[in-house]
Image (tube, rainbow, N blue to C red; front, side, top):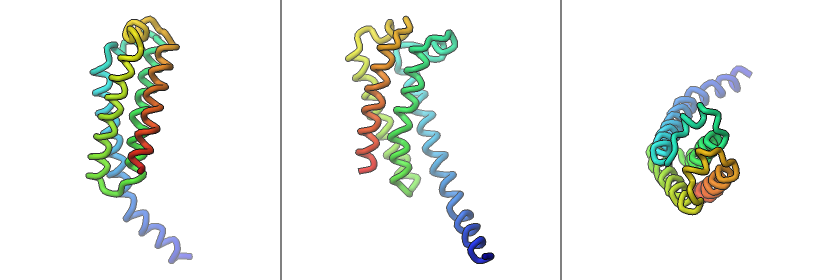
Length: 141
């Protein structure tokens, strides 16, 4: 029994630093992705959320999830931090391009979100999450 417990502790001691490093890189990429996303949107998510605008909150939450999905796939399929960082960056760029394309498809997106239009927010989130799932599958290859 001691031998098994010792093996578990050894594996934990070896694996935990790797896990924490990979997690930290992936979370940092997510923070960068959200920061870039909030800078390129034509509306101020923080203000909208603070004002109780449900459409603004929905688009921000959906965007965070849509950015996280392909990052999670990259994390799950890569074992080297540099690989996670590079493919994670590619995943974020693809997601931000998807957002830019979605803004072209939804007429007057800024006005719709600022007016609290949940239908427009849901359509945007659907596009972003749909692309994120496909992006994640491509990353997992």
